[in-house]
Length: 265
Image (cartoon, rainbow, N blue to C red; front, side, top):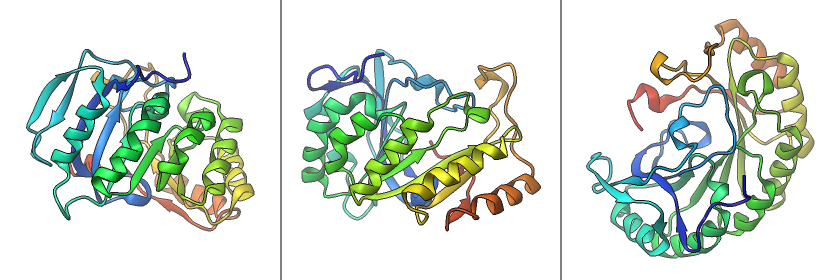
């Protein structure tokens, strides 16, 4: 896997749309979502496996929140993406712009050119959702970000092991003094030792960084790509694990995927 996948001033997208953020610190706010294609992780709980590779086309919402998608060709040029965002950016409607995926940082070279123009065009805060495992690419775009949601991948749940990258990534965010929080997917199979290690990792950077425990949303049979589907943790597990982590970090919140409850994208 190459470090970035942008081609000159173009990027491969999945979709652009307006919706209510369903996870983390920005839950409940209205955002313009730019969902990038490609991901170099293969998390067992992934509900966006369709983003792992790039399709020949992407879909672009014409009217914010209306789901009136137009099908367009990939990759998308920088000026064209700016034009699409301008069309979405109705005054007073959106609180921020979400860069999501897939893994947006695989497009870091594109983003380093795109984000300054995006900020100038919209005036909206820019929020990055990331797997938290590409600190070098993060450094390329940190000056253009307002907030970062870093996924911390537990090996017992995700199948990924990225402790060192997570630590460097979180330090970069903290040292840049932008808003940052950590999101951790939990299931019945979560190893509490990994939660303790996660809490200690966050506390070593700053114990006031918010942590969000997100019970996994079980995938439908047709969406599963693993023979052993993950199940949501029990209520007692959630209570115990929150208490465990609060021995090390100040703010540990339990928030499920609210956009799934609201039938949002």
